[in-house]
Length: 340
Image (cartoon, rainbow, N blue to C red; front, side):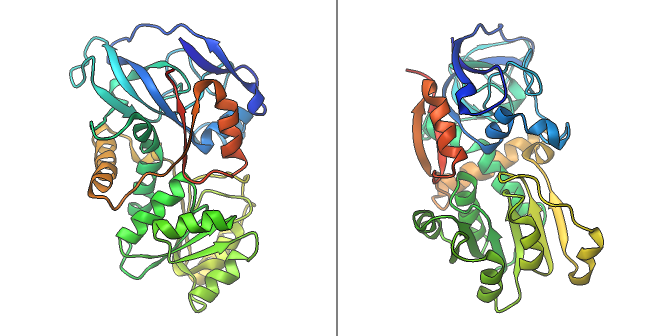
């Protein structure tokens, strides 16, 4: 089969299309013929070799037999969708021919993958494989970010950084569905239009305006009740000024680099809470995984949660797809079509 391999850390040019042999599925595993793979910013971290610097538990996921993102070579990609064509011993919930999606298992930049059955999400027939590769990581991440840290009440203000990305657009829609007032930060007017179309009440172009001052102005000096931040270095310190008294800052990534350390004592004067997490932390069991996935799919089927696919690239153009993600010109999710 064809697969993208990374044999050295570096830029997008390190992504190389190769021939690769897969093992047969072992006990409790399935062989998935992939139709689509979703790109996430964690793919960029892995390609650069940056996750090693953040500690071993930043992305504590199943890496597959013989695959490990902390050693070379490996096939990147965590979001995938396709059709099961073989199952290993002990697999009872799935059978060949089933349509499935999954996340949290390395190796989706490929035509096929061997995946633990417990990772799989049944893919409804009315969703395309591209949609199946677009919703798992970002959809379930949006769910935990908006349900695990602060119980949103109608009228609460939520500040969402990178509001026009794949995750950002889902967060905007979900926060609005929960009755929040949503402020999004974006880099361009085109992205501002996308965030507004998703339901953002106010949009801050951080390339023209300071998000702290604008957030304060838009909230009459109070600040945001909840701030969701996957940017990191250029936003984290400002979050502590833009958040309201007794507000909450949630950090789920560091697309712009690691934040500057702070003194914990600085949080007490306005009773600020800071939390961090990854989807792995909030999908520890099969029950939890299916509960979150079902909530995402319910929102899609009810129509208030819409997946925005920015572009679809063939597998051989994975490097160009990552360049589009890394340079932040995309709006919504980027997908690789993994079959000809």
